[in-house]
Image: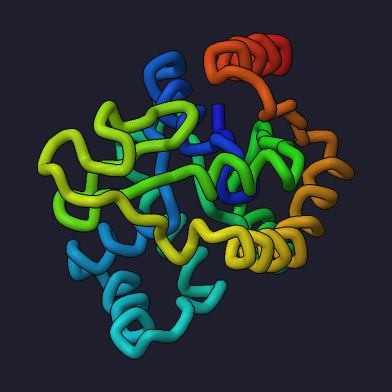
Length: 212
């Protein structure tokens, strides 16, 4: 089963990817991990990607498609995979189809903007050891102090409400057409991501089972 998983920052797609890995016994692959892996191997496509990464430029779609093809051609993907973070734009989705990369189901983690803001703005990070907490779902037992190293917890710039809204605007502009693209192809599974993680995972597994 070849799966795409899409969702705004804070939608819970990372949590669901981890759950699906265990339940489907297939790898979850992020865009960043694919690029890093290609570069570390020193493959021809990795060298092409490295040239852009080293200059701080975005890796072009044609190079990313080659990176994806290289990674999905590895033996651990023979029974399927979960692709996280790609395609991010409509041209990338169309390029995947042209390259013969088959998609069986595209999971869209749908969650209201106010829920995303609440989830992300409640995150607290230790500036010393990097431990992550959340004021409601995973609070530190020491309040605003890290349990591990007694360092004050901070709110990352990315987790401030104004920044979150800007991130969501960019996400909606880029990924909205991608969601519509897979909806029109009859491959979209829209998931109510404003629910507990286990219920969401059970729903996804059930839906996948019906589509096999």
